[in-house]
Length: 291
View 1 (cartoon, rainbow, N blue to C red):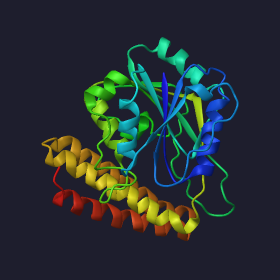
View 2: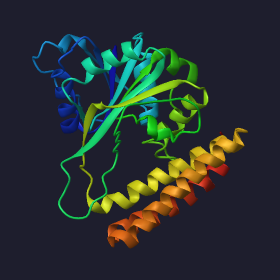
View 3: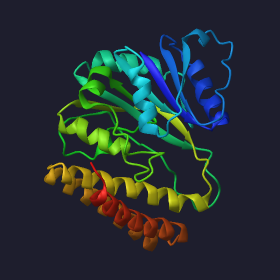
View 4: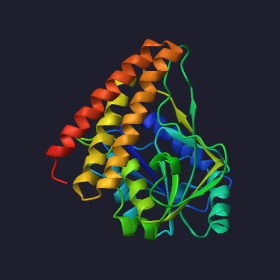
């Protein structure tokens, strides 16, 4: 088993993420850090796991590219992906290994991503994934992110090979589409009828480090990516699937705007309006992009 952590100029957060890997009760896994940017990778702690860490220096740009470099650098049967601002709970790897044995038919296993260090006052947590119960899902008509996100997910290597990994035109660091890499990957996996399993027993903690004034641009970027990904599938002759992805994005924009009336928070109004604008931008860019 290998754990891939992609990072770009967030050494303090990366240090906490790596420290959480060093506290795993089961340490029989390799850690691969894919580093972009200028910040150095923090030195390994003396925890007995040092020999299992290696660093890939990447002069390129983009989260999808970094993930692809990570999984392609290992021959491990299963690859875990963790964001550099997330910390896995100590029993995460041990629980995952048990789940792999119990659900041999599944190609993707994911857990919850819980927000931590929430600021006081109005706020919209980002990068959160919640599961109230264990579920097995297969088939394209599930919300792509209902089977997990890249902050704490394990994927069978043969499945990564079959799908070609992440689309490097999408995701953080992309010039045109700074999000939706997980939605696109998960949709393609579900469309291929691969079985997935989600469980609340796997928990990662996601530090909420963004300021309130950064949330509206962040959610706008999410919708730019989702609009582009939907149009990508439309233009790839998956008209039904692309339309469905677009409807999901429109529905989520509507939910954000409707929540303003319920909660009366101006932050939600800014985020909701920014999301609508972002979706429009993403659709326009998707129509112009060379997919």
